[in-house]
Image (cartoon, rainbow, N blue to C red; front, side, top):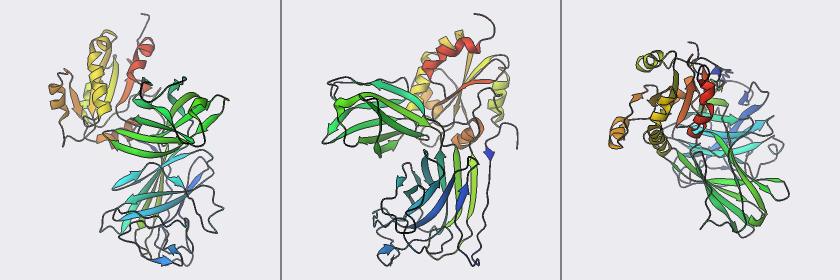
Length: 418
């Protein structure tokens, strides 16, 4: 594996033979001492429910063996075909966020189990999520992302008396749109739209007594690199808001449960793999991207400051970033910063080159063959657009930087006195 390439991998592989006399538990042990167990799953689709065990829907483990009870006794179901209801148990992690990803989509908000049956109620942190699969699929790979790092404040806003959604605006230097909190009966409701769909996020309110309040949330829509959340603060009054904070953190650990049986009593041999996201690039040499045209362009700029911009023409935040960069191209050039655009999206729906021409933007872009997945592994790209700034020695001095921060760090990236 070449230097600088993707992530530090901690893998634990469990082969569970169908002939085993005992029942295995499918637990991923993480390097930080916590663990995530895939407790079980059941059919979630109203069109494909596999019967009941007593008063419960039939539950089974990742290897297809039946569970004696139900991790969650709720009888919820969906009209979406070929959906499954999963439960995981997160152990040894007091404050963590998680995301579940399958081949046909993801659940970005796994929720606490509401009705665990006896034998499951002593678990550390039971959470449920749903995923959809192909109609013919009998075995699947499920991925769980876990965010355990400290939260980073992306934007905060002071709140003022008589603010309302109809005449009050909350501006942001980042890709975050906050709609003014409003009172709905006994609760406060806040809508947030942002471009950090691939990271864990949360919204907090500081009340006038100096206490931080946490919200319940659900997804209100997603598309084009943006995601919208509806946050509810129970039993709270809008008049008691002092300040609002929007925070984020990366999904640092990724757990793959492979060969998970999507059919009850169909025995499989599950495999568990744990990967740890690479540490940031700051202070390290800019890695090779593994594409000759891009690596050559960067190499020709040795001795000069380089700004890489990973983007996707299909995403509105990316297009906005490119437009802003084009408006600052002269400013960047005057400060010795060489801009390289790297397109990591698909060109099936829209060509980035055609969009640049149509938008009268006189910048060129490279198409990255590895796409956003490879960009994430090599350069730690967490969301799009993603900027990486390297000094004249091509040592990374800033990553994930916002455009408004560039002017503040120019002096740090230039060699010698001004």
